[in-house]
Length: 463
Image 1 (cartoon, rainbow, N blue to C red):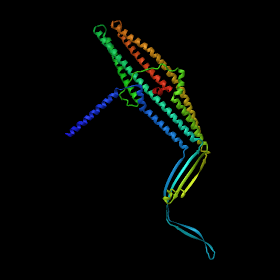
Image 2 (cartoon, one colour):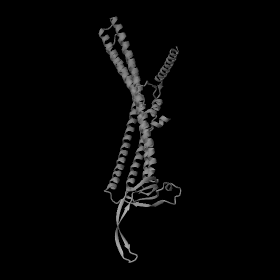
Image 3 (tube, one colour):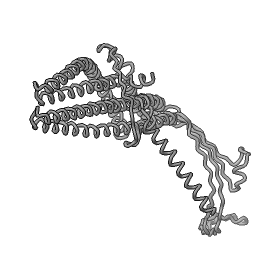
């Protein structure tokens, strides 16, 4: 009886947990995400961004490691050993003098040594302090700090890129959803036309060919609708992937869209990029870092000066080695080392020349990037302005296409028009709706690309 009751309670708990988790999942799946919410998720979960943050942490550790060139190195050693000498015989010539006759003679004497075993204990402390190395340590610290700045700008640039990817995927998903609605309306129009055609055929007002044509038109529109549903599903997967989520995670987005018509003039845009683009700041830091690499390489031509202090204790008795009486059983050395390499097979020369080549390469790449960026910004600006004009034109085209459909259907109803004219009008209307939607969302994507080129993506997101 107890067992049955226990099982009943256990099953009830499992059922409650299942129902609660189902409710939670349902709430998740019905949640409508805004663009900012999608960006928040991506900034937290995107794997590429996480890797960039780890690289930035490593650059921070490199700054700390760069101080090793100027800080002293301290080492402590302790030893315990047994020295064993085996038995041996040693023949030596000994000079003897007779005390009575004062006669001096030499005799060979064999000295026999027994096996000996001696314990030795040691304790040592050594300190080395670099004093001068041609500025290598100083330039390494500066280079590490410069590389850290480059890493920070690179991380910000990567955050801008991830936000742009979210924006592109978000607006593309909205575009595909809107196009799906257009195709659904097109199917509804085709179904309505088929219904009217069948009624008119039953009344003998038209030929059966019109009915078949209407059915073909409906079938084609349904095919387009099915294909668009697949496109929407793929757009959802792409947005989930950019956000760092499972591609099949349920997703709903806010379809509201706004366009900024007050962007600066074209001639002002590149200066905005110079002031804000993190990739430009990163390029400047990389160029400075390459110059410091040249200075580090040249430091090998200078002498190297360092100081040292060593203190050691040795005795057979361990207690005397580790006693606090430091005035006995010790040895001590201190001094300075001065060294300079005069020739090492052109290694220093090659190192300097390669550093100079790397500096020139960095400069060329940086200038090339700025030229390409200026061209991209100008193109984004022109594209956005064109899309604004295209949107206004297509709004007028859409109204005209709606009127064309209305007139074609009325003419067909009274027998003054043909089914082909109705179909052409419907296709024109669907195309006008497609073009307007595509232009609106493409304009928003281009505006996001322009912001990214100007380096304003993350700033606008924070605002």
